[in-house]
Image (tube, rainbow, N blue to C red; front, top):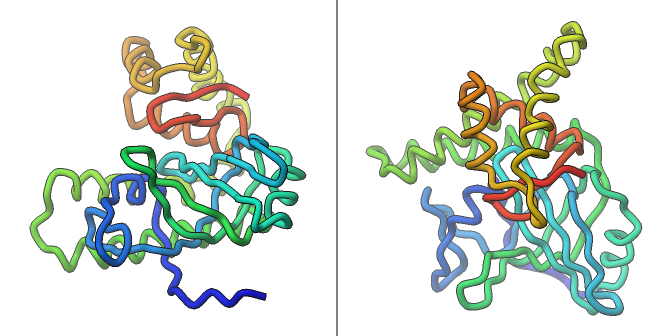
Length: 234
């Protein structure tokens, strides 16, 4: 079996999608350099392109990320095609980008995992992102956005146990409202996230509350994000 010797890093989807290609890998706004990555998230889409070639979409509490499997990894392609979204998966692979296309991960290993492993991964990513941000000192606007993203990701994970302990009668109120808004704003390719948030605001729902409700829907598999700016119901 081929031995992979490149070091593996990990980061949130939102930080990785902001990365720029450098000499030794992809450099994120926090100063992290990544060539190979390890990710855990929700598998939201799987598309078989050709025999043993698969494109898919992975979401974490910060956004979505495109992944691909080529013919050289048939066992990985078979696993992905056999996994019904939504499902928590862990994967590793190389970051890749063609021209100005979205950065994606070329996957070489993958397995189905549980929510608890995803939660531990969120804490790990948050810890390393915070360390990189603290080393910078004075933050740029984009770096502050990433800091806010990290905080929101932690809030999502920390809130889930409390949410399940609370009266479930409260759950449909906001999440159900967001589902209705997604339906109202949806076209052939889904709904623009900005439109959904705007409609929520017009209905008296704050942006942070709306995003938290959408994240719950994403993590529970009620919807997914084909791109970082659109959202669709499953």
